[in-house]
Every structure is written in C-alpha cells, then in structure tokens.
Length: 164
Image (cartoon, rainbow, N blue to C red; front, side, top):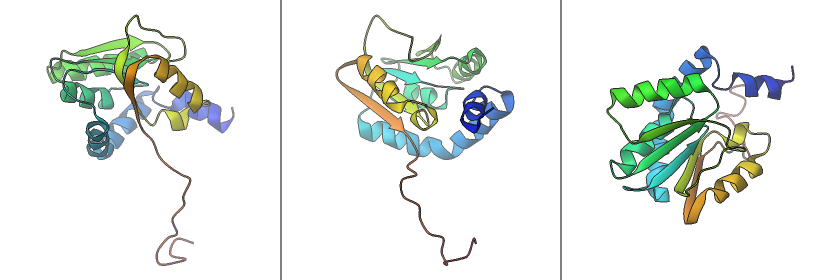
C-alpha cells in the first residue's frame, strides 16, 4: 500500500487515530476558534463542517453560532460521528446534526452560511475539488474557512545545525 493510500485509510478511521486527533485538538482548538471568529462565523449562522471526524471543530462552531444557529457535521466515518453525538450530548449542544457521507457525493436542499474544516485539504488527493464542492454548498457571499498547515516555507533550525 502506498504511503498516501495508507494515510488516507488511517486518517481518523481507527480508534488510536481518533484519540490522537482529539489530543491534537487540545492544542489546535484555540487557534481554530480564533480563525473562525475572525473569518466571520457568528451567532445564528448555518455551518457545514466537512470531514468533521470526532467533532472538535463542530463543537467549536456550535458554541459560536449558539442556539439560534445550526452545525451540520459531515464525515464518512460513522463511528467518529457517534463519538461526536456523545460529546455534543455531554455538553448539552443540541444544534449539531451529524450526517454520514462524503463531501463529493453529498448534497443538501438548502445552502449554508459557511463551510468549514480543519486539516481536510492537506489530506485530500484533490483539494481544489473540495473547495469547488464547498462553494456550491454556500449561500451567495457565504464563507469557506479552512484551517490548514502551510509547508511552503521551511524555517531553519536555530542555532544552525542544532538538529543535524
């Protein structure tokens, strides 16, 4: 199995990987919340979280949009969605709808104010297809907000040679 195939298989679809993502979220959540708020996610919005996994970003969005808003959490891992449902119930967040499906095939009868995701594009074989699909699920002037890594710039270690 090629590395990219293995990564696609492992990414969030085994219990150990789900735990790793939850731990990672404890570090990333403050940055993601800041990004969502600065991008314009606010109370009353209808938000679609694609590739939601166990729901860390969905839970953040749910708190931001409040009771007057809704979050639709889309993932093709049903077990991860069950974890999200349990977490939302524990936090008494009743504004999250979990949908099992793939962003490429799934459609909604209504459009969203925002489509969000974290570390989705970087793990996709075709990020442009996801962005194009996301745009088609948005209201006019809707927001597409993705929290991704940028590996286009590599910083040197300091002092030079410290990690050689």
